[in-house]
Amino acid sequence: MGYNVKPLDRLIEQFERLPGIGKKSAQRLAFYVLNMPEENAKQFARDIVDAKTNIRRCSVCCNLTDGETCSVCSDPSRDHSTICVVESPKDVFALERTREINAVYHVLHGVISPMDGITPDDLTIKQLLARIGTGEVKELIMATNPDAEGEVTSMYISKLTKPLGIKVTRLAYGIPVGGDLEFADEVTLMRAIDGRSEI
Amino acid sequence: MGYNVKPLDRLIEQFERLPGIGKKSAQRLAFYVLNMPEENAKQFARDIVDAKTNIRRCSVCCNLTDGETCSVCSDPSRDHSTICVVESPKDVFALERTREINAVYHVLHGVISPMDGITPDDLTIKQLLARIGTGEVKELIMATNPDAEGEVTSMYISKLTKPLGIKVTRLAYGIPVGGDLEFADEVTLMRAIDGRSEI
Image: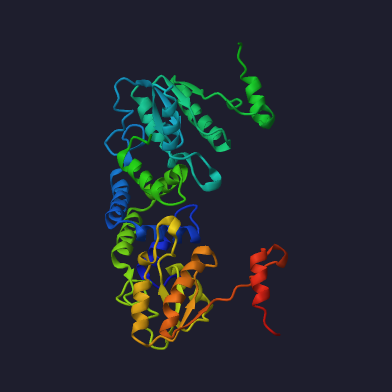
């Protein structure tokens, strides 16, 4: 059931396919586009095609880039002997915001998840091993998400790479800064106790 | 602050400009587009341009159409002597769903709202008067929203058209079917009492 105006119905359908956009929102967005100046709507369309066409994976770390290698991998001031392994490009962004990481990254593009049929072969683990193969890498900082799949993926990569003489670390677990102790779950608290440090 | 990948940042910005889409949602949508098959992303872009380029206002009723006149206005089985006046194309859609209306429509594309600087000249009232001028029209059914602006707009049009010998009616006010009497506001209840009918 649509507005019986084909180009409008098609645009509503397109918006409806996006995640988290329901029928009502899709209508609202389509009408918004109709009311945009024509040049803006065309620019919007161009930006979709442009992003889809020009963004590829960095040939080194598999992060998203519009060049051959990403800005981190092509930065000589970075410590290329330490690789921070993350699940997705969003995680790179989050870590970069801290300005704490001088290492380079490796983006797995997922986690091992037998339930969803995702095996190690679906991730960029082969590329990671190839990087390690060059002999330049000394440490992997595992920064997968603190959930079951993230843990399993970290363990898997750790088991593969430790025999190669690589130091494998992972981000500390603990109570989030600014968080409230009474709302922390037991597992987090347990990990925070295990990981306590002298002050 | 973006991902430092220009085409991606631009696409995120585009989504952020849409109403009701925040920074996080915009990122989610942009990544979704990146993961679409290329042909789907291009089709999405084409549908945006297509909707923007091909949808115009019906030359008779000002509803949205991709032709010269909309499907309702070009339907000879409709009663062209009765015009249902609504605020927006969405209202036409809502009324058409009832299958109760055999009249044609007139879409005002807004309501008189001095607060927002919208005067009668910004609406399609001139076009409505032109339609009445042909002498074919006998009745206007005012179906603006039941709020202050909708009321004012209805009254304004009614005052303009009654002297021309046009019958002007408006949709009944009352308690919504399936609604709960105890949650109805006083004004609605008052209107429902005023408009009571024999059973």
